Structure formats: C-alpha cells, structure tokens
Image (cartoon, rainbow, N blue to C red; front, side):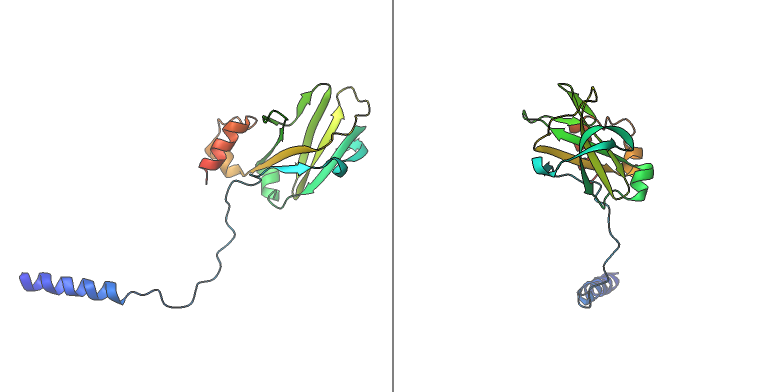
Length: 166
C-alpha cells in the first residue's frame, strides 16, 4: 500500500511538472459583448448642432446632431434597447425624451447610429441648445431578458444593472 501511494505521488509530480505553457499563442477569439456600451458621457458642442425642419421624417423646427455608433447593431435595433440620457447643470441625469422649460430633447436610433433632437414643445423655432452632455447606453436583448423589471429610464438603476452584468 505504501509503495502504491508513493508510485501515485511520483506519477502526479511527473504529470504536473511536465505541463508547460510553451508554444504559440492561440488565435484571437471572437469579439465579445461587454454589455456596457456607451458607458462614458460625450459632449455635443454648441457648433455641432444643425438646424432642420425635418424631425425624423416629420415637419417641424429642431436642432439635430447625428452620431454613428457601431454598438447599435441590427440585433440591438430590432430586439435590444438604446437609452439616451442628458446631464443637467446640477449633475443629474435624465432619460430622453425630456421636456424642460418649454423645450424638449428627444432621440431616435437605428442600426449604426442615432440622432438627438432639440425642439420647442409648441413647434416654434428653438434657440440653439448650446453645449450639452449625453450618454447613450446600448442594452442588448439578453440583458433586457435577464432584468425584465429594470426601469431603464432611471439612470442610477440602469447603470447598476449594466455594471453588474459585466
């Protein structure tokens, strides 16, 4: 019995010592999904807004800014969710659409990007929106399914869920 134990011990030592990490590095794996897309805020400078009378295919007066976003895939556009938040001067984040003092920030998205609109709620021509800070959060359908009771319009709740999904 003692010899059998010794033989097994020596065998285990030999196996573990013979394992090495030498050799070529394997191929790059497929692109992953970190689930937190658009985690960082971005600034739209006053000069970046363009005046338009075409608001997502409807007649009206608005300022618009358009962005390309590769994180908004056709899968996200068809089954996921994109939530846009604006940061106000007091540091609070509000989800769009948001109406404040007779003006409205809204947005739309499709595969590959999004547009942010600034309008007067009465349809008159708005003044320039100036410099604004936004955050676009792309939420894949898999995250929505795992967290069906999340209020995605609540910035703090959405960020808590998105960070825990990593």
